[in-house]
Image 1 (cartoon, helix red, strand yellow):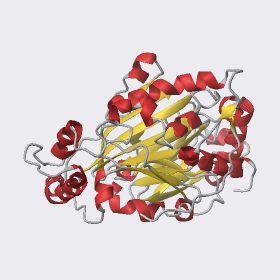
Image 2 (cartoon, rainbow, N blue to C red):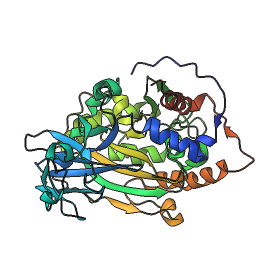
Image 3 (cartoon, rainbow, N blue to C red):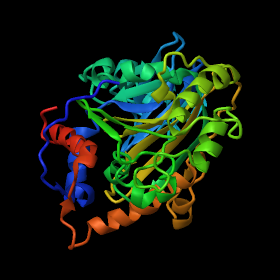
Amino acid sequence: MERAPVPDLGNAPIPKSRYTSREYKELEDTRLWPKVWHLAGFVSDLAEPGQYLTYEIGRESVLVIKQESGEIAAFHNVCTHRGNRLVEPGRGRAGSFTCLFHAWRFGVDGSLEHALDAETFPQGCPSDDLALRPVRCETWGAFVFVNLDPEAEPLSAYLENIPEHLDPYHFEEMKILNEYTIEVPCNWKTSMDAFHESYHIFGTHPDTLDVNDDVGCVYDCYGLHSRMILQLAVASPRHPSHGKLNDTIREHFLATAGIDPEKFTGGALDVRPAIAKAVREIQGPLMGADFSELNDAQLVDDFHYSIFPNITFNIFGRSAWLFRHRPHATDPDVMYFDFFNLVRLPAADVPRPEAVFHEASDDLLLDPVGGGGELLAQDTYNLPRIQQGMHSSGFDGLHLGDQEIRIRHFHHNLDRYIEGVA
């Protein structure tokens, strides 16, 4: 819960060209994405040897496979013969991987097991030279990370204080209720920015002002990563019911914690401690989860963390939303928004949902599927319009205030990679 020092990052505008120009996208493609750790997927999707998943980032595709030894390894998802993509995007299980072009076969360890008519290659087909190219792969808790740079620092160093902060939430005990990807007509950073501050709540989510304190939001900037803490189950100072126990808090927060709103006799200041107590004593046993490692705020509020460069978490104690913001391979005006709706149910048998992909459409952006509901619909409605506006000659760049310090901090770290000093 300790506050981080407030960094002095200046107040210069953020140039709009970072969001719109192909030249800047090319800098990201060569200096950012090949150097950072990427959250590629979930350890739970790789429970048995031969189980695999793919991670698509720009023009690159990475194949992550559970080995017979129990380790998890990653490889470039490309046949070393003629460059054919070896595996289609998604998850599965296989004993080997056969290229659909010329039937070259690779083992789960990446080795070349068979090259058709190998004797016709005068230079030979040496397995050591033609094995799938390895990619750095490490895990943290429930998550698998990959890095395209073989000389990258260890994942533990890259994550800084994130494991210390987030391990008590036990993501390894969370189940995925919904997973979908939306193609959104905006730059990936436009999407990241939208989830870096609570300043937009008054304009974008006015219907939620009766249940959150958007004004008193706490922002902390670390080395690469950052967080904000949005207090919930209280009304905003901008809302008429500020300081009072309103009906929405009664019906939503009290009831979902297992507290009968009709029998609750406390006032506005008693709500949050009562919710935390009920989560530990009522919800915890029902969910089969032990919440003793989390304090009251962590069981009530939205603890929002960003892992540089493209991961955001909304964590609510019992559940979480995980967003992954991926760039399009060639177009700076398009990105892929990956949504995972998680709930902590360690003992429950929850079927793993299939990932659903949606191309961009106004109808979908107004009403995204899955657990995000109206909140994400409001956010995704704005994103294409922000991107369109950035191309206007009437707009020069982002004019940021103190409540948007996480955006400035993000660009400070982005500069370090683009300038080659990270």
